[in-house]
Image (cartoon, rainbow, N blue to C red; front, side, top):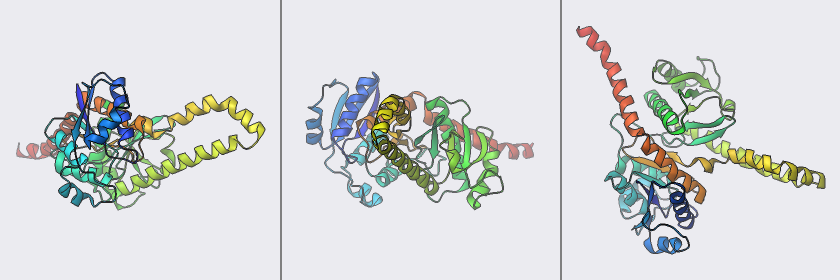
Length: 345
């Protein structure tokens, strides 16, 4: 069984949606065991509304909740009995294989690094959500953890993102690109210009060069590398435009009797198409490069997104993603040492 600690109190609709998501996850995957961490009385009241296997869902009491607006560092250090801190400590101690939360992004980022801890050699763990595209999904890395990244950080992002897409999503030799304002190698800001040749020299990724933002929805790359400021802008614009287009299509279909009739005819196909651009079906954003798996879902996550995020953790664990990241780092270090060894000979 793979044990997933879920922050039962995190998100706009907790604990009802988090509990519903946990119940759905164990019904979908026989290897999942969920530990709901939060105010026990409230969590058990929600569980009482569902039929589930009690041997596969347990509750761990945590009396405090870290709110979204709280200073993250202070909250992690002062609210030691919060659902986020208690659940992350379970991952640290090996009592849980992964942690899922729709709670405070800042607290999750701080807690991930200070409580769960980074893999040795990883300087800055990135948040990496899957985003829908015309060809399936792409991984946007980083989207919120490191607004001031260095070139070496982006190279690590590219390697970790490639490992994730190949072994979790199943894309062989995922195409990796860096976000830029043009496809020419000489374009970009100082960070992109310095990072580009470093990515070009990486033998363990399939680097295809620069990608402009307009090519992202078309599936121009499988791994999209950037620092968190740009990544977060891309993600928020992506979500905003998607929601606006869906709303406008619905309004257009109800504008007249003719459009209503036409809408009824195209509704099944349209519904299936729009479903592909629903980010909730892809789960949350893993914080890659930690000693354990931490997954951040949207603060507005409903049960389906919580459930998908829990299932997402199973594949991550089964594919030993952290071990593959460690192997990649070891190979990179070995490659650095080879020239020195040759000189000594």
